[in-house]
Image: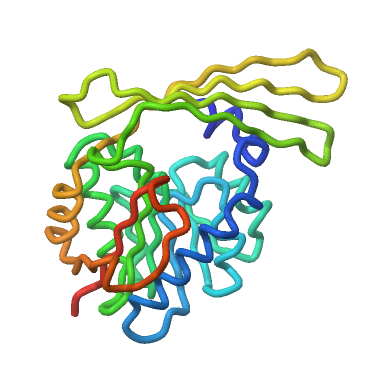
Length: 245
């Protein structure tokens, strides 16, 4: 996918770190409501550009991982004080545990139940007993609706990006949907560029998420019982689980 490879240096103009302050606060409040014991260390699987970590690092000692080396470079520039590790969330093993594990929207690239289960097992393997896993997928099968959105940012270096994102489900009987991106890239002294990128992403029912979390050895928590207001209700799904002793 171009967005996470040759277009990675443009990523912060598509989704700027300033867009993530409220979401990072929500993640921290979920952790505080669910954690058993201290919450000092955090592992993020699929950190992307490190936008959530740019806020969470004030609360936690963060280890940030991603399958894309180009995206890790974006995150390193934003979060130089954090540990960065190149690795696939389906198979990564660091040999240590954390108080918190975060799986943001990178989890959407798990296209099969086997892939999703592998990523959840990775999360469980790195979560201490009583620690908290927070997952924020864009959609579940129940919440998905076709739609589009647009946006973009201007950079201090004179570059600008504007995008259209369009997500559709060509085959409702399978476990994936398609997101098409069209991006307009402007930089000083150069002609306007148009880039197209297609992403295939996973789509699973709530029941599958709960089953695979339990199969990974995690305790799925009731969000209502946590009593944490979600400012993004309806915009993405949330799952919270606790590591078992």
